[in-house]
Amino acid sequence: MGYIFILSLTDELAIQDVNPYSAFIFIEIANNTYTGAFLTETQNISVHFQQCEKLVKAVPVLTLGRPHEFGKMKEVIGLITSYVSALPE
Image (cartoon, rainbow, N blue to C red; front, top):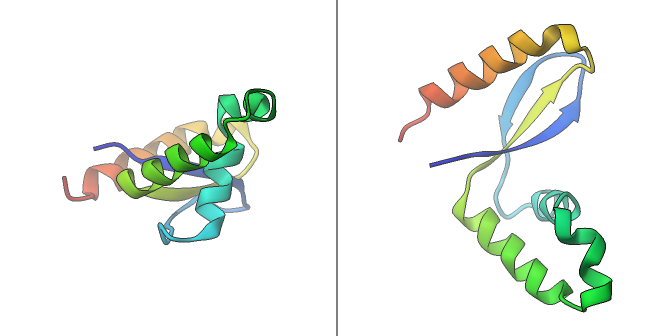
């Protein structure tokens, strides 16, 4: 099983669970898809929203807070790796 990480800029590295029924999750997923820019032209907004809803229900979503410092990338990768490996399969 995979995970979706919603990225945010914070001072400290942190991973947090997010309520899958939160409007925040749905909005973040809908706003951060490649097809989002084309939805008005193709008039497929409702289909896109349905797909986002299915995705959020099927895949766990977490937030990943991290500083905007490339030098911290090893720490970010280490945090993600240890967090995900500790999760039940």
